[in-house]
Length: 175
Image (cartoon, rainbow, N blue to C red; front, side):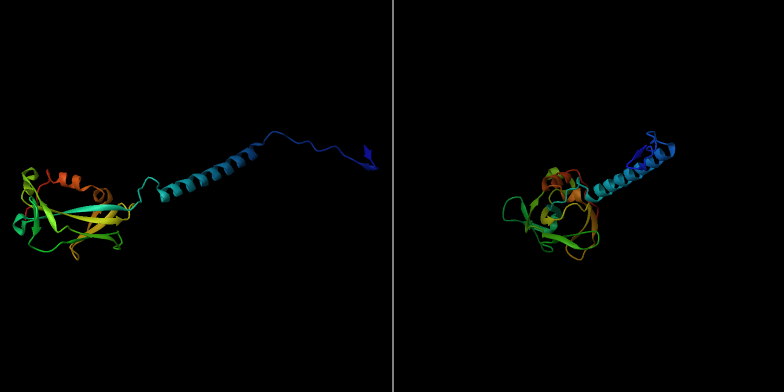
């Protein structure tokens, strides 16, 4: 056939079936792309960790003072230390950076007989505001310059009532 004096050839036949080599290559490409997407999503979730509560919280630390080192407070059932002063509780991150601090109240609560080994001792509470959440493990130091020890975030988040309740079954360490 000629069109305007030029010869036109028939179009080449195109195969609509895939060759095994092309199918394998496409499958490999999709597997690599899928793996990259899965790894990216996993890393993003691991770093972001939306299930971790990162909001600042108020921690409460309780401290005990033996009965012989306290005197009655201004109200019935209260007590005041005679040894030492109100102690500061300091919370650090695992790298030793100071995060927050709070002081024991001046007056504490004289514990009754339901507290077993702790009966008669005085319970003091330190309120520590604005502790950054989401770190999991913290270091805490009582009294400044003391030994730091690890404490879990869930323990710091316990209410005063829960910590007080734990004392009813806790054994007093032997001195």
